[in-house]
Length: 338
Image 1 (cartoon, helix red, strand yellow):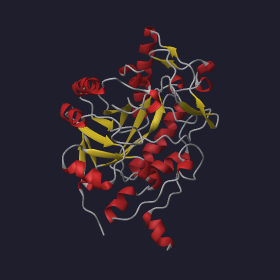
Image 2: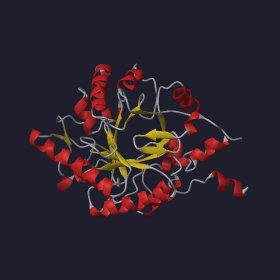
Image 3: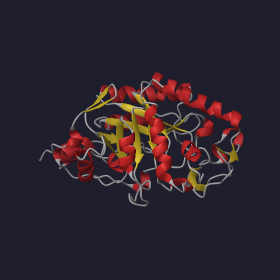
Image 4: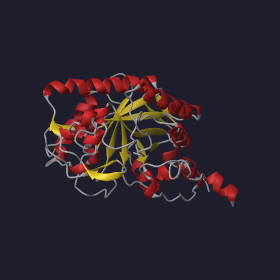
């Protein structure tokens, strides 16, 4: 039985027209190995398979080697990386999709094994996070960071500028700045720690990567007021703790929605029913799904058909090859095999 829902309606995102309101959330998959940290043929297939989403947001991609925090995450600072991403955007566009790249600098959430010349990761203050990273094929405690010098900050800003220029060269429709989950920009905002289409991801109350703030509501009301003044294309809000639960701390997301005049993308623990309810109430414009897109490359088609979803395999989320990456069956493939 086909479904006609608000999720399937087109949406005007700035100058772009999206075919529906489903967004594929950025999902770290660790399949861009050293030494180039460039997306390869599997990434082309992976994103191409999911091009029916209204908008794809890539896995977080480091703006410099210093910005890398996990093994085998892709970058957007070298010629080889730009060339690899160009093949991805070409495939997505061939299939009628739209794709933004998420840019990150992980700050203190890193390990000396990933840093230039084995140096310490950088952070606003030399406070080590009580969390782990994935390096040398295993989870390991993050390394002790050093505090950034004020004189170094313009260089990091330049890294983001260069990454944005590279994203344009690679054919992306826009960029999303990763300002969530306790990475560098989030570290600067919280006390416990352009003309191209640009959005930003924020996570007001997530405890991810040992980040916290004693009073997040006024902090994020203030941040969103200023983001609104910048006329960004969207804010992408992780509601609750990253990965759940959604109600880990009190927070008024409607306040952010009211303050920001462009598109509001809601994320975290949404199923189709909750997504439809939120869209109908006007509490969000777009809904981002994460794990359902990992295991259902044709998530949009399954929604249209009212079909069941594939279960995801957590063991293949991070690293590896095609298994758990490009081999999840589509509805058509499953029906053909029956």
